[in-house]
Length: 253
Image (cartoon, rainbow, N blue to C red; front, side, top):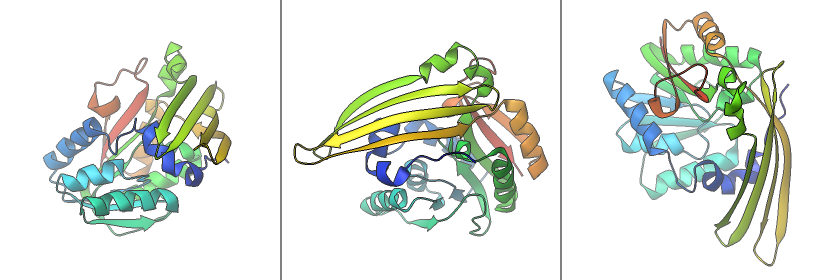
C-alpha cells in the first residue's frame, strides 16, 4: 500500500505549483491533439483529471470529454474552469482502477497519476482502460522513468523550495524526494504553509510514488491487451531510456 498525498487540502494551490501558475499545459495538449486527430478520435476519457489541465484544453480543441477524478475538491476546480469557458465536459467522481463510464475513442492518465497505484493496481487499471476503449482506441499516459532516475537525472527532483502569492495568501512549499531503488519508489516529504496576515495554516506530507522502467510497462500493457505501444519523453520529445526523466506511452487497442 502506498501512502497518498492530500489533494483535498492542496487543491486550491495545485495549479500554481504543479502547472507553474497556468490552467493547462499547452505543449502536452498540442501533442495529444495531434495524436487524437491522426487517429480520428471524437470522444475521450480523462482518468485522474485533477484540476482539468488536459480536459479543458482538449475540450477547447473540439473533443467530447468525460473527466474523472477521485478527489472532489480537484473536480470542483476543474468544473469551475470549464463553466467559465462555457465548455461542455462531463465530470465524474470515481476510482480509475474500476470506474466505468462507457467506451471511448481515447483515454488519458497524465501527470504521473499511475504512480499513486501499487504495481498490482496499475495492472488492473490498464485492464480497465482497455475495456473502456472502442476497437482501435488510443491510450496515453506518463510516469517517471526509473532507468534514468537511477543516474544524476534524479538530482532535478530531489529538492524544491517555492513561494507564491495566491488569492491573497502567501504560500510556501518545500519538498524533498528520495529514491528507493529496491522498490522503485520515490518518497516525497513536503511542507506547505500559507498565511494572509490573519490566518496561518500548514500541511505536512510524507507519501510515495511507484515508478517504472519502459520494459516493465510494455509487459503490463501487453498483458492488458494493448497490441502496440510507442514511447516518448515529455510532450512528445524523443524517448532516451537512460536520460529521459519521464516516459509517455501511446498505446493502441
